[in-house]
Length: 429
Image (tube, one colour):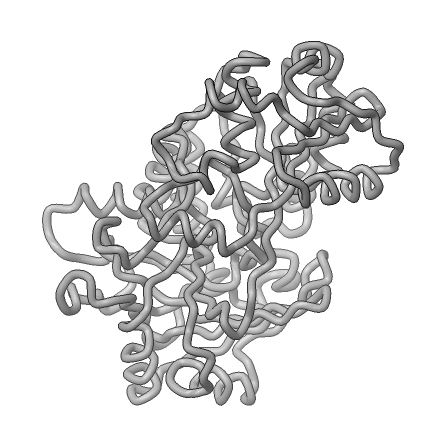
């Protein structure tokens, strides 16, 4: 990749630079679908990891979630694997720098966006808006992995709101997607993926002018964004670490779907969780199956107050109508009302910290995107799944624009980009 310079002055908006994409050579793998993966934090271990590892010996999961005895060995293995795959021409760079149009279609959803190398802007510039806190140990692990490989393997999902017109970047995307794609594949989840490259200087300039007026919300990838910033801070001079791989989606044209991320409390049995919330929340057993319990949760979420569903003992328990006095005493009062009333805020500030006294570490709390997987793991291991209702995008954006971050793993925006369709190696030039 020709290293993008530090373009312009701070605060002028999004700056998305073209790069030489590193992509799988179709003839060297079983299929493009078989080498892709969901983002690293969506892969449900161990079943999801094993499925991906056996789908193809070159599946990207061997780079984003390498398996070895120690963290240092994992990071070393990933770097060696990436180098070997390039030497063997399993992965090969595109001939010239490009921005990429990426399309996902499935489940009644059409999403299109631009993949490129985004200039990293400090938070105070207001160009990139995070909305969730991060866990330092995950940032440390991702930083060691990226540092060792010298690569960005997964495009972060960012959203921005265009003016709804069909000019600028929108016009370029519409024109490009009417041409044959670089690649096309359908993954196991039923989503069809297509990718195009944009190399025409006029098109790139048109996109650049459009994006320079925009700021973006981090929809998915807070830990990797924090990793990008950490790695950039380590560099003594301008260079490729000043940019990070992202997918930018104009949600005025392609609204994202927002789902909840559920909690798995590994060492808290459901019976103990229910006993502890007596007098704190109203508790009702909800007849299953799981879709019926989620319907009850959605109905409860339409009323004032917080609500959750607990599962793991073969039944479903709806918690709602929390004690207002307890919330007033335990929820921090120095934040906006929209933050203080979030389900995730009440879960962490009240239930986890004070009622259940669950330590805030990976040994005790897991984060799972799929409801059925959360329930299954809770039942299998005797823990408690806390099923949550999603937060609306408008609330997320409102808080982000005020500089207020939500509790970690509060939202799951999607559809998420498939990992493995295009990578960014910082060594290419």
